[in-house]
Image (cartoon, rainbow, N blue to C red; front, side):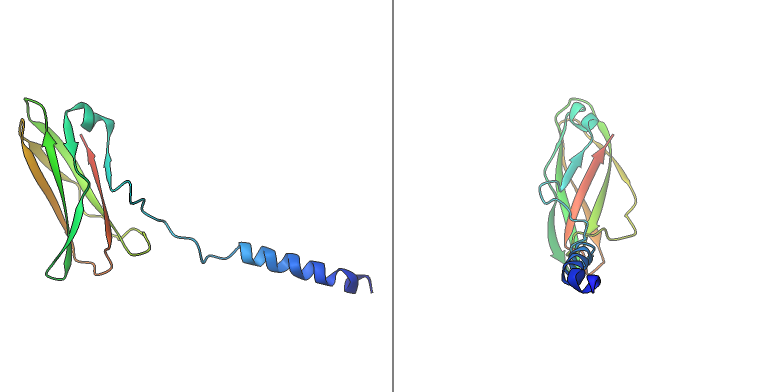
Amino acid sequence: MRFARFAPSFLVCLLLVAGCGSDSHKTLMINNQQTLVMDPSVLTAGITAQPPSIDDQRGQKQAAAVIRNGQSHPVTLHYRFYWYDRQGLDILPYPSVQTMVVPPGATVTVTAISGNLEARQVRLYLYI
C-alpha cells in the first residue's frame, strides 16, 4: 500500500531522468564564427587571412581562402582544411597537412576539394 502512494511521484522522476539521458541533442557543432583558426605565431609572422568560402565544383565542394604576407620576407606556412557535415560533425579521414611558402608582400589563395557529398562546412587551420 505504501508503494501505491509513492508510485506517481516515482514514475514522474523516472520519466524525467530518462528524458535527460536522451542522445537526441548530442552533436559536435562547428562554430560558424570560427571557420578560420590561426596560431598566434602566424599573426606574429605578418600573415593575414580571410575565412574560407565554399563553392560547388562539378558535384564536389571546394573551399578557398585568401592569405596575405605583409612582411618583406617569405613565410613558410602549414595549413589544413577540416570538413564538416550538415550536423557539424567531422568528415573523416582528415586531409593531409599542406605546406607553402608565401612570398614577401604576396597574396595567395589556398584551396581544397571534398569529394564527400555530405560536406557542408569547412574550417581552415593555419600554423607555422
